[in-house]
Image 1 (tube, rainbow, N blue to C red):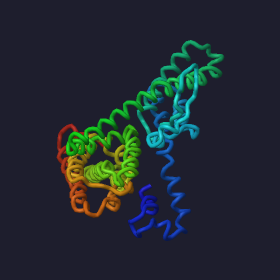
Image 2: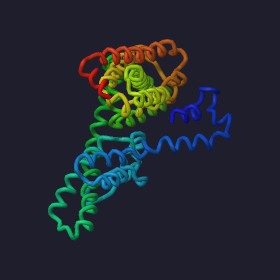
Image 3: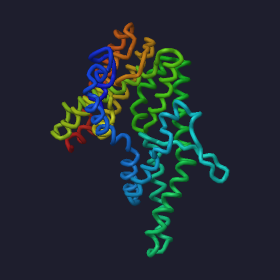
Image 4: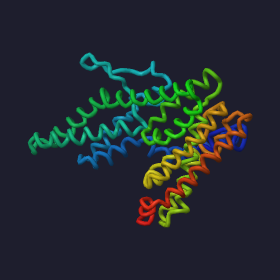
Length: 346
């Protein structure tokens, strides 16, 4: 996906995207994008399989549940954040239920997976064995799906909107503090998938003001996650993990942080915390300087190309700060006995 970003975004090798200058690369770029984005596009299905298995249910039903939440008939959550007035509704028993999908989100499928596993266990104990094959799976999916779209989905969406509005409102009170907090929580938001909601906020700012101020801060989290993964490359003695760490670091610095977050930093915990701190400090610098981006581009090292040139100096400072603080803290935390033991065992 990072490689595709290099081909599809303007201002990196030419003023136009590489694909406009060399249209013959379009097929290669499209194939790369399909191969690379599939696991993220169907993330709820993968999470559903893993979570339902962990909760003691049928993992196949978890896959189906995850696919239900990203059915093409549903409006993607990112699109809903931009144009909520275009959402369609089911009218069931007098209830208007929004047809919203949860692509890339983790929290809704986790809660739904727990409900599915417990519903399946409940029904399996009360429905005779000879007809379980006919009734248990369909009823489990119907019950879980109904509660997901009526309660679990809207509640998690409300919580996500609460975070979004709180962060945006905090910038009106104290931009520096808001920048620190927002920079620090971007990575946890990526874990839950709630970071997609800020896409609508950034696009709205660009449309109304001609620039975005939140996106430049979000970039600091990508740099921090990449720096943490790179630090693990030097710290960890496991050769397999070294390979994962260095490739994840490169991906993060090209705008794709999930491999670093899920494959490395959350595994050891302390690199993830270090990256949050580094991104928070860097976010405060970005916010204090009032850095503005004219567009939303690659969220990594090439991100400065989307920043107005008059802010490049302070932005490079912030980028270096995020990386440096994260690396130093990761090294310091790795010396603590509790984490040092985990590294040795791995």
